[in-house]
Image 1: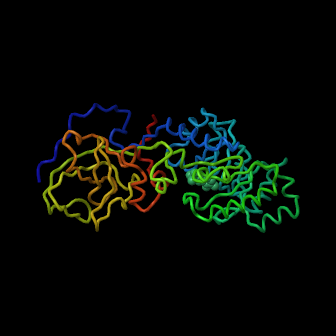
Image 2: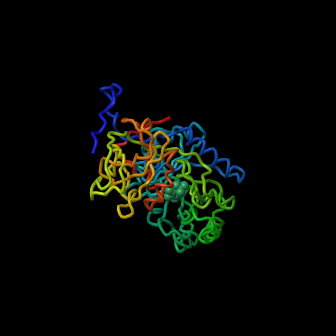
Image 3: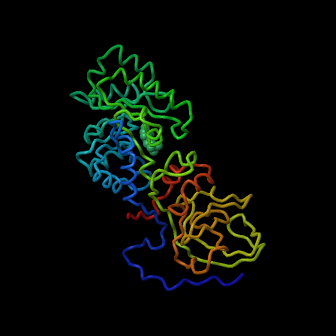
Length: 383
Ligand SMILES: *Cc1c(COP(=O)(O)O)cnc(C)c1O
């Protein structure tokens, strides 16, 4: 084994900024806005308007900054999952229409009211609690079940609501909605089935705006647009039909990268990482300062086949080689020219050069999970 390269003369680091060696999630707000426009234009011909889904800290991107960028572009309707997320958004956007997708009315009613958040109600008990918490007609969305069988009012609930209209008379119905289970599979028969079920439901509420589509639903075509669409993942740069269409209609938003800390030349038969993955050939190995604690999934390296996700360094591809540790990963730099692998170079785990879709495929997961797993330790930078 040759001596590892020492640290190159590094930039002086500000004493007030400890983020120097932290993994970095760079969020391209211009790309968020561009994706919003693409989605808005796609539904514009149907006369539908476009909201923004900002749950889970905007899929890990940072809800405040994303919301500011969308608001400036004219997006006035936001969806949060939890009431706490809605409260934070309300503090920043007094004028926004903010829906809460997963309200828990027995605990959340007071906060919903205080912060003028609109709950997406999914059972009769919740409807009754929300009516009781309001003196005047209670602003609400009704979330109906059409086949995903998560949160949603059932067919029996619908019959009860229509059979005795006392509940409906006390609601200020802002939205009738449902959610698609399989919109990312364009040919799935569930899409058409849910669409037909939703049409029957919304026909009972001719005066209320209707909403069915998430990002993937938008791309299923005008039949799915109704009055309001609710894209999340598309804003953050993942096209849900990426695999089926072999490409994206949206711009990548997130680049997740961390610095190269050490480079070493090893001989065939030497090993790297936990479980001692043996090298099949003489190799140049790089150590990068991020790991599963930052959201780099262990599944991005397969010890049995020694197959690893291709990260990129200065435009050159390099596969992960060796098990992903908590704070470190090792990559194979053998094919990367020396000048492209200097200590301190940022190595892209996913982003423009290393599509998140490739990482998701290798880890057997989705772009959604990879985005939302990027930990709080990673510094968010905005461009
Ligand atoms: C998360 C979510 C969305 C956004 O879905 P994407 O696939 O990210 O576009 C829309 N509606 C509901 C009910 C959701 O839970």
